[in-house]
Structures are given as C-alpha cells and as structure tokens.
Image (cartoon, rainbow, N blue to C red; front, top):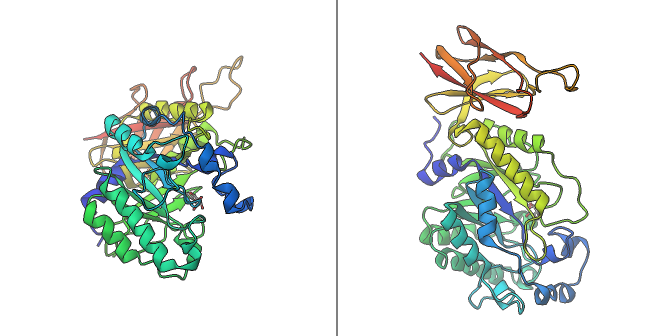
Length: 411
Ligand code: GLC
C-alpha cells in the first residue's frame, strides 16, 4: 500500500518549481557560501563583513516577481547559513543579524515573506543547523541546540504562515544527538502546515529520515523515482540545483547550465514527481545577477508552452523511449518529447531534424486525439493495445522548445 499524503505534502508536490536563494555575508566576497571555511578566514576577520553588509539592492518584491515570471511557486531563502549570520531579527538571541548590521538595519526575512505573500508565492526558510560563528557549536552542543531551537521558534512565530523549514547541516556531526524531536515539535506547535525538510547532503540522496520529515532531498543532477510502497508516511521529493557551480554567488564561476539543461532538469524532476528547486546567488548588495534573471525568465517562457501540466502532472506508468516520458493529471496524459530539433531547410538549418515516430508503452486508455500544447497542432498517431506511436513533427522554424509536450484526450 502506498500511503496517502497529508495535505501539506500533497500541496507541496503541486508547487513543482521553486527558487532557492543563497544570500549572506559570503555574498560580499563572491566566492561561494563556503569561503569562510574553504578560505580559512579567521572568525574575527570574517565577522567584520557584517559591518559592510548593506543589502541595498536586496529588493524582495523584485525577487518575488522574477520567481513568479519563471513559473516558480515558492522561494526557499537562507535565513541563516553555516557562517551563522541571520537575515532575520533574532530578537536578542544574537546581534549577528541583518537588523544589527550597521549599514543594513533591516529584517530581510520580513521583507521576503511580505513580498512572497503579495505575489502569491510560498515563503520557505532554509536554516543551517551547523554554525561556524557560535562557539557553543563546538564547546557546548546542548546550549547550542537550545539556541538553534529558539532561533527556529522566532522564525515560526514572527512571520505569519510560512511554507516550511529546510534544514541543512546535520551531516556535520553525523553521530551527534541533534535533539530533532524537540526541534520538529517546535515547528509543528506553531506552524502545523509547514513542511519540514532536512537536507541529507550529496552523499545520501533521497534518504528517508526522521518520521516528521515531509520530503526527501536530492542535490545536483537527477532525482531517482521513489518507491513509496509500504512506507509509514507519504513523503514528497525535492531536488535542488545550482545554476552554475556555486550556491552563494561566485563571480568567477562561468560554468552556467544551459537553458536546455535547465528545462530538461525540470522535466526530469517532474518525471519522478519531485519538485525542482533552482538556486540563484544574489550579489553582495543583494541583486539578482542579470544572467540568472534572464535564464529564469526563459525557463518561465518554456513552462508557458506546456500549460499547467508541469504542476498538476504526476508520474505515469507510461514509458517512453530515451528521455521521453509521460505525466498524467488523471484526466489527460502529457507526453514529453525531447530532441525534436527544428524543421530542416537545407539553406538555413544545420541541426538535424528529430521529428518522427515516438513510441510509448503502457497507454491503457484508448486515445481519441493528441495535440501539442505549444501551438495546438493535432498529431497523427497509431495505438495498438497499450502501445502508442505518435508522429511528432519537429519545431516550426522560428522556435525550438527543447522539450515539446503533447496532450492526449481519451475516448
Ligand atoms: C550543501 C552545502 C550548502 C548548501 C546546500 C544546498 O549542503 O553545504 O552550502 O547550502 O548544499 O543544498
């Protein structure tokens, strides 16, 4: 038996695509969020970055609008990363936070939550569990855990309804008692509808954790399908990915994923029912880089070619050849067809033309008609029992959608 998802988990799965944001003091250095550790910067020196932190270009409304235009339904922002600096008002727990930073003096999380609410996006909070700033993390772990819990309680009580907490760092002390029962109970007490997610890290992709955890995590690459048969609770899945090779901004990182890679990655996530959480790393001043903004906008334009099925479509038993696959929303099936290329014209089109017969198996219903979602073009097909052969034309000259979606109606 596959367990029935609780409402918050079923709702989360339908969000489909989210924006991850890594922003903190490290953004001022532009070498990724691990620079304090990897660059061996002494804590006394590193903490001085707080005096230079202005966040003058951190425009939460603009960020929310960029996410929305990209077809993203939620944003997961680093409220505190491993460096220990908080973007929220810790209400006296620490003065290492944005409201105390002399040139900032703003609660960026308040601005973020307000902007998300205004744009109809769900605000989610990334929170580190490991801390390079607070001495107790190494010297007095129990006291540290109380500080962590109190910090999370502030986040759960001061910002209205939130989408969830996304923890990261338990892998740093793999054998320690993190007192997670108490931590998660704090969240359930104040925010019963919030998702609780714990990043299991690069080495433990898709690992099921504590019974309160609502979603497994994958990091970089491709999520694997979940076998939920016999699970005590239905958990969602989410895969997070950098847009180049860094989470916190890396000014020397030119290794951007291409648009086709981003589109195919989103498709590969939805194929197995996982959400895709795509990261942006704002500049030291808090602005989203133009290149990242443009790429997201284009992913949004692609999503608009396939209607709502990216969100409503669930994994289907239908199998396609190669990268091709299908999703179903219970009424229609959606066939995702890759590598069609564009119509050849000897004098202008160099790329090969990938049009032709695309084969899918496991199509149980009798198909009445199939059409492309991007231009409504009706497609020819032959069905033999549960084998379906769709004649899929290439993209019209003037377009190349990378992945085209064909939706099928049934008799
Ligand atoms: C890893 C990194 C961390 C990053 C996270 C995002 O856990 O340590 O810096 O925030 O991945 O998934």
